[in-house]
Image 1 (cartoon, one colour):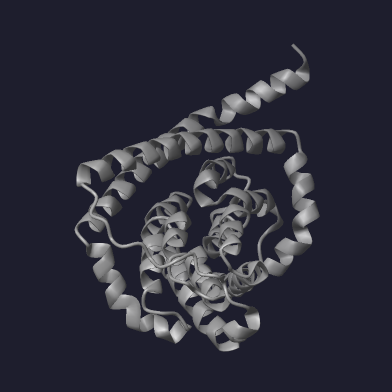
Image 2: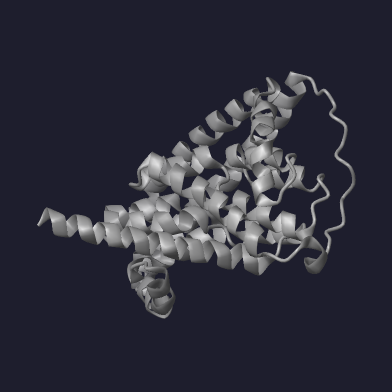
Length: 315
């Protein structure tokens, strides 16, 4: 067997135990959280929470009904938020504002658990992601032109009338969708972790890091997190968790590095799939991307300043 093949096999063997452990943890979290949301929806708790938040959304230039889309995305994912949003007949401006909120703070339970697993504090993650979505929505409501100027998003039709679905039928649909998601997660996490190990062991990750160094500098991020930043931007937080843990375990990045990265990617991740989905239903893609990158840069540079002050005071 060639040296190349041996090195390739050793790279995979090195990360396989951690990959299996992360996959099992992600499956466990997904099943628990998604089932809890199913129960909350069944008892009308999500609808109640949406009604309480409705008046707040007028400050973001959104109708009260948009709160249901936000809350659904907050506890579940962006697919759920979009499913509700497209029934509301929002114009381009409103869809863009709602999309920014959802992109900043969706799937909060699972993705917060992922970031906690890689070293960040739970309340830091929740506050950063939630407040970032609210602040950006408020700012965009002030600066974006009217819906007439931006153009109107054609409504997909009135919201469907509520249809009572038996709980057992909902449970069956949940089981099938959760199984599919768990299979998808297992495959993607495994492939990404293998790819990360191979790129690191063959020196390709360093080349990628040098290429992205100028962009990382603008964002206030260390060069060494470049590959992890790519993973988070392309496929999201959950799928990149194993790779991030492996980088920490191998001493390639420090806890401060990961904390800075988590601050950034907490509100600016999955910029391939999720951003494209919102753009397809009327969101302005460059506003969705640049507004969150700008917010992430402000937060990271602010955190770097706090870290610097803390270190100096501790000397």
